[in-house]
Picture 1 (tube, rainbow, N blue to C red):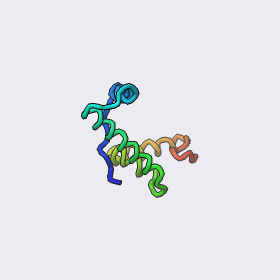
Picture 2 (cartoon, rainbow, N blue to C red):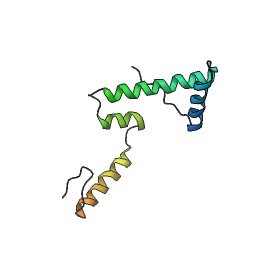
Picture 3 (tube, helix red, strand yellow):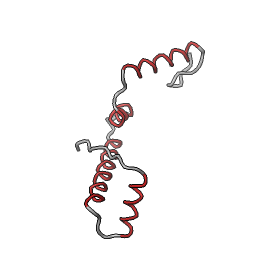
Picture 4 (cartoon, rainbow, N blue to C red):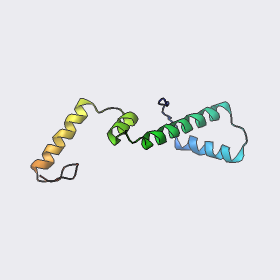
Length: 95
């Protein structure tokens, strides 16, 4: 399944869509398109989560994009600082 366009809808828009689904038998073209995109995104996410080959890291990158070099450098720096201070690392391992 190809990756769908991510839905950029507000909670109010989704609530309105649910209200229409409960009270009407027909949607406007605009509401139908939103419903189609929401369901397409939902199916994509569910299939991706069920795919055992998809790691959490890869899934996070698909949703939010890859880390920039600056973000990765900051993450490495904060782990080093915690180790130097005797704290636990992100993975839960001590020094």
